[in-house]
Amino acid sequence: MLNRRHLRVKALQVLYSYQQSEVKDIVPFEKALIQSVDKVSEMYIFLLSLLIEVADYSIIDAGERANKHLPSEEDLNASLKLHDNLFISALRQNAEYQAAVKKYKISWDFDPEICKSIFITLKATPEYNSYLNLTEHSIQTDKDIIKYIFKKLILKSPGIEQVFEEKFINWPVDKEVLQALVAKTFKNFSHDEPNENKLAVICPNWDEDRPFIADLFKKVIAFETEYQDMIAQKTKNWDSERIALMDTLLMRMAITELIHFSSIPVKVTMNEYIEIAKEFSTPKSNSFINGILDKILADLKASGKVRKIGKGLIE
Image (cartoon, rainbow, N blue to C red; front, side, top):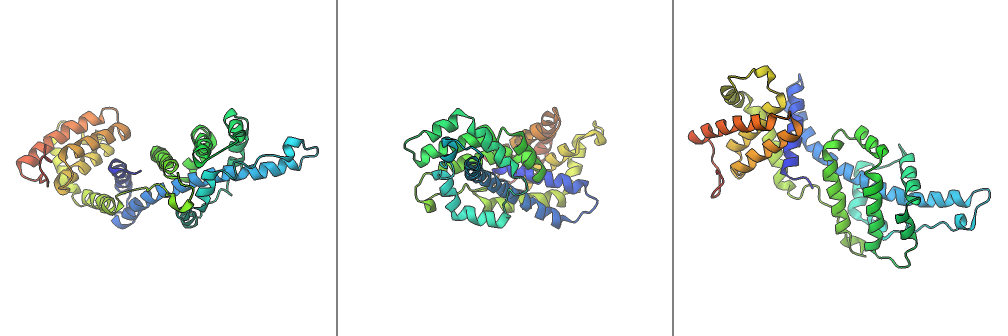
C-alpha cells in the first residue's frame, strides 16, 4: 500500500517535472500528481489480470494439444485445473475487480505471447505438476500455485519487466508497492463466497492523504523564493549550481512540512526526506541535506515558525 513516504516521492517527481518545465501552470501538474496515484491502481489491476490470463491460457493449451495430428491420451485429457483454480475463480467474480477492469480498459491483447510464455514455463515446473496431482484442494492450496506463478515466474520474467516499464513510467519505483498489494490480495481472498473477498486498498487513508500531497505540492511552489533563500543562507560556501535540483527540492519540501503541517512530527519530516535522498539523489546527499536542514530547523524554532500540535511533536 502507498504510505506517506511513497506519496512524498510522487510529489517530488512531479515537482521535479514542474521545475524542468518552461510552462509554470500548476494545474496540469497537480492533476498529474493525483493521476500518479491512480496509475498504481491501474498497474495493480494489470498484474491481477495477468494471473487470470495465465490461468485461462490452460484452455488454449489444452485445445492445441487435443488438435495435434497424433494426440496422446495425455494430450486429449489435458488438465483445466488452473483455469478452475478457486482463487482465480473468486478474482474473476469479484465486483471490485470487474469494475476496475472496465475502468482501466484492461486487456493483454497487445502482447498475447506474454501469457503463453509464462504458462509454457509453468508447465515444466515440479510445482505445477504437484498442483495438478493434488486430490483435494481449497482456496488456500489453490492460492499457493498462484503465488508461485506471481513470485517465481511473473516477477522474474524479463518480458514482464519490459512490458511494464514501457507501459508505466513509474513501474521501477512502484514495483515494491505493487508486490505488497498483490500479497495483500492473496491474504484477503480467504473466503469461499466471492463477495466476502476484498481487493487491497491502494491508499487506506486517501481522504487525508490526497489533501496532504496536493497541499504539499502547492506550498512548495508557492513559497519557492522564501525557502530557497533559507537554503541559500546556509549554503554560502557551496556553488549553487553544483547543488542538485533533487536536493534543493527535498529541502524545500522538508521546510514546507516543518512550517505548514502542524500534525507531522519534526523527526518524521527530517527522517523521511533524508531516507528519500538516499534512494533518489547522490550518495552524499543525505548527509548534506541533514546538515543544512538541521541549521534551518534551529532558525525556524528560534523564530517560532515551527508550531506542532500535540505533545512532544517538536523534538
